[in-house]
Image (cartoon, rainbow over all chains, first blue to last red; front, side, top):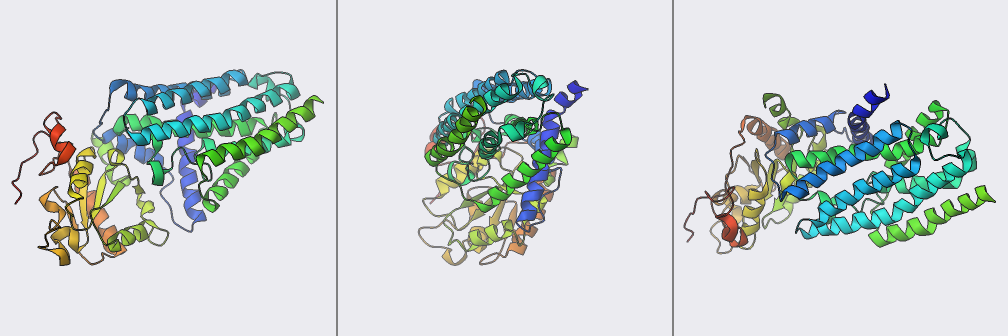
Amino acid sequence: MIWIWIAFAPILGGLVYGGERVLRARMQRRQGPPFLQPFYDMFKLLDKRTLIVHAPHALLAVAHFFALWFSVAAIFLGWNLLYIVFLHLFAQIVLILAGYSVRSAYSHLGANRELLMLVAYEPILILVAVGFYLVSGSFDIAQIVRGGGYLAQMPLLFIALLMIVPIKVKKSPFDVGEAHQEIVGGVEIEYSGMFYEFLYMARFLEYIFIYSFVFIFAGVSYALGAALVAGVFLLVNLVDNATARVHTMHMVKIIYAVAMSLAIANILWIVL
Amino acid sequence: MKFFTSFRKKSPWILHYNAGSCNGCDIEILAALGPKFDLERFGVINTGNPKQSDIFLVTGPVTYRSRERLVELYSQIPEPKVVIAVGSCTTTGGVFRGMYNVEDGIDQYIPVDVYVPGCASTPQLIIDAIVKALEILENKSKEIEKPFKLFGSVETIGNKLSRLNMAKRVKHD
C-alpha cells in the first residue's frame, strides 16, 4: 500500500500544484487554468525537441528529481527525520551544481540564490527535527506519528516552519530562487523539453516534502493533519497573492532574525 | 507520438519579445494575460525563457539594434514553435515603413505563422491569434525551423550548429 503512495507521489504533487493554480486564479477573480494543467504541461514537454547544453547538466536534473523522490519515499516509509532533511539537502546540492555547470549568468545567479535559500531554511528544518526528538524521544517519523500534542508543545517551531514553507514552494515573498521577472527561473533557465520536465516534476515533490512536515505536527490524528495542511496551503497562497518579493539578503535576515529565534526559544522552552 | 501531440494546444507557453515597439501592443498583451481576459484559462504561461516556450509573440517594427536578438531568440526556441506578429508595425512596418532605422516587419528575418493587425492590436484579437496559432502548432512537425538571416555571435557559431547551419543567407541592402 505504502509503495503505491510512493510511486504516485509525483502525481499527487501534480494534483496539489494544479489545485493551487486554480485557487490562486480564483483569489485574483480569474477563471484560471484547468485542474489537470500540470499534466498537460508535462505531456507537452515530452513532445518538444530537447536542447541539451551538456550531458552532466541534463543528468543532474534527473538526479535532483530522483534524490527528491527518494527523500519523499523516506518520509512515507517513516524513516529518521534527520536523514530525510540531509537527503533533501543532497537533492538541492545537485540542483545547485547543475546551476553552476553552465555559462548562463542567470543560471549562476539562480544557483547563488538557491544556496542562500538553503542557508536560510536548512537550520529551521533541523531545529524542527530536534524539537520532534525532544518531545517524542525519537527521530523516526514512524515513532513520531504515534505520539501527539506537538502543536501544544512546539507552537513557535510550527510558526518557524510556516515561514519557510514559501521558500520551499517558491511563493512570494520568498520566491527569490525562481523570480521569473528578474532571473527567468534561475537554475531552470538552460533546461528544455524532457529535462525541464524533471525539474517541473521535482517541484511537485517539493510540495509533498514540505507539506508532510506540516502534516506530522498533528501526530496521531490524521484528520487534524489534513486540516493543518489545508490551512497552511490557503495561508501560503493568500500571502503569495498579497505580498511582493523581498530581496535575497533580506529574506535570509528575516528568517534568521524571526524564524530562527522563535525556533531556538521553543527548543529552550522544551528543554528547560 | 500521436498521444502527446494532442496536448500541444492545451499548454502553450509564450515568449514575448519587444523588437522596438512603442509599448502599445505590449500593454495589450499584458491585458490579455491579466485577470480580465485571462489567457491562463487556456494554459498559457508567459515564461520569458525561449528554451521552454512554444509561441513567440513579437511586437514592434524590427529596429536595427533588435534584429540580432530577434533571430537569436527565435533559434533558441525548440520545435514545434509558432511565431505571431502582433500589431501593424510587426506585420508590415506600419507607420515606420521605409524608414532608415527599421526593417519593415519581422517576416524578413524569421518565418511568421499568424499576423495580427491593429495599432494597437486589441486583447480580443491577440486571443484569437493565439487560438489560431494553436491550430497551426498542432499540425506542425518537429522539423528544425531556421531564421532567414543570422547576425553577430549567432552568425559566427551558426555554421557549427546543426540547428542553424542551413539558414538561408539573404543579401541585405
